[in-house]
Image 1 (cartoon, rainbow, N blue to C red):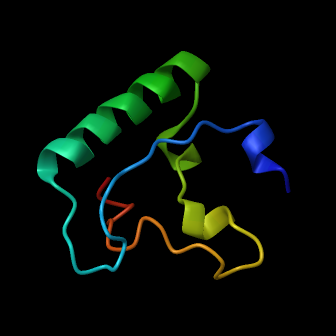
Image 2 (cartoon, rainbow, N blue to C red):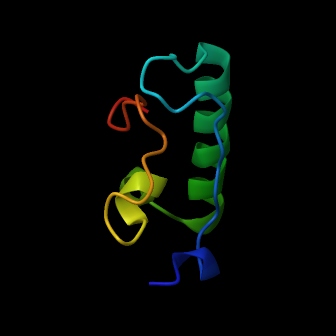
Length: 72
């Protein structure tokens, strides 16, 4: 509840249909930003999540549809 009070959002841009792949350069840049944030705040990579996984009620958000979070 209220995760916007204690999180940092890193946005990726695409149609969020699950059909358009995320460009490699965009994913690499986002991964770099997330890695820097994790180091800065002393967070484990497991602290990274998606809008879809934290939005309530469940199913309200789908982004980033098509991004392999485990690989990210």
